[in-house]
Amino acid sequence: MEKSQAVTNQRGWRRRALFAFVGIIGLLVAWHFYLSVGLSSRVRSLQSASSEADQQLSISVNPLTNLVSMTITMPPDLGEDNPFAALGAALGEAMVQAIGPGLIERELNTRAREQYDLYAVLIPYRVRVSTEPASAEAVARMRQERDKRRADEARAKAEAEAERLRSIRAYVASNLALERVRIAPGERFGRTVDGVFGTIVNNGAESLRKVTVRIYFLDNAGHRIGEKDFSPVLVTEFSVGDNTPLRPGYRKDFGYNVEDDAPSGWAKKVEAEIVDIEFMEK
Image (tube, rainbow, N blue to C red):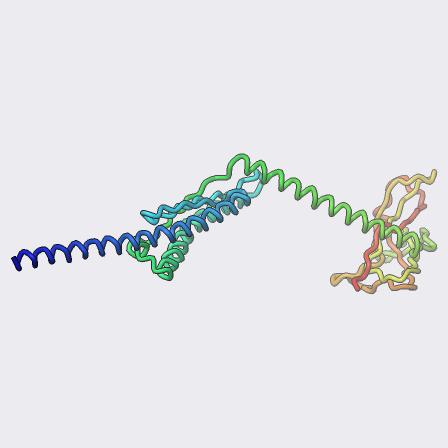
């Protein structure tokens, strides 16, 4: 009878040990699934964020196999004539395949150890990354956004240029003057040539790094039959000769040979105006 009681007790201990083992395994699996639920929540929030950004990334997690599947939507081809676009897409896909999975796996498995996820230690996370082209809707939307951005940039640039021209015209009209513009003989390589001479006067409060004068060639009837632009004032690091700005109250004499620029029918008469200026940076 004592032997029968010992056998019964032994069976009881085995049963309790089995129940304990199953319980421990259940706890490990339950803890892993609990953490997986948190991971899935983070993945869903990431997926929602990516869907607002043209669905560039989608992720799914299998808590039994610990397989993480990631699908990356490659940037759309907007049809621009860029010979490097296809090469860039190919390199981007190669980098995703070569670098992405290993980094993500290490991060997930390190996090599992930090959270005492023994199930993930026994069955480590594995990441599978695939790529897919952008959808037609995404391409159309990005083209529309690109065109709108370009239109906005062009409009802003045009408005800035219009404002610059208004400021130039206002300064020229109020503060700059051309005096004694005339045709006179000049000398070039030892011979006499026709030249346009005159003086620019700056009566304003700004120093000018560039002043462009346009000369109009006139026929006998006083009609304009040609033109030529000169910059008597031009301050650059490449300028040869006088490289000083036209300061407030200063005058600048100029003279240019126009023999090679004058059209046939020119009556050796000219008109002149200042068409462009640039202010010195303060």
